[in-house]
Image 1 (tube, rainbow, N blue to C red):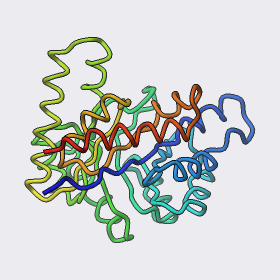
Image 2: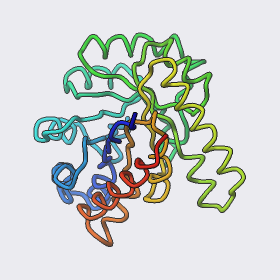
Image 3: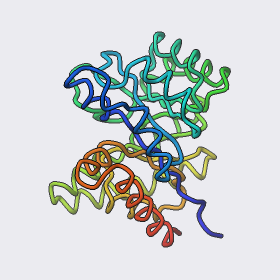
Length: 251
């Protein structure tokens, strides 16, 4: 039995980062979302942070209104973000950890220590007809905790693996990829849909595509960076090719 087609969610946060660095309206993240879909993205991801450092409230509303593919709303588990999500009604909401001092999301949610805090957020989102995922570390304990919280989807944090490769620490990279492999298998075993993301590029996306239990990758920063040199559409098309190449060897 062949692995299911691997979906690509394109995160357009850093189009908004460039816009906000100068002020004004350009470049427009909604235009980027539409271009991403035209180039082959299966959905759009955007993170509305508490400090609004990139995506803003009106961006999220416009994206939801104007795109034809699913919107994945990344959000912290706060009352304010829950209210916005329930008003926006995205296809999906991914609960992520958030710290004011971090440049980017540094790790997965504490789904073990934060279990009781997260349960009502997951319940409310699900009642609102929103698919819920939890952005977590690739560990069996975290995946089991996510299921007990009631999340139908987990997104495995791939940052430690990608960072180890960037540093040339191949032994550590092998260990981190092993954690991802085991985590993806555990998610499938207990009936939790498995996604992955953070720090992925063409090569790492190609490799992780070989894990058949993973059904979606969410990629942003690398694609926006590549777009400076080859254009957003071409970057996404190249990513789609890399993912499809890797998927051929899934099993």
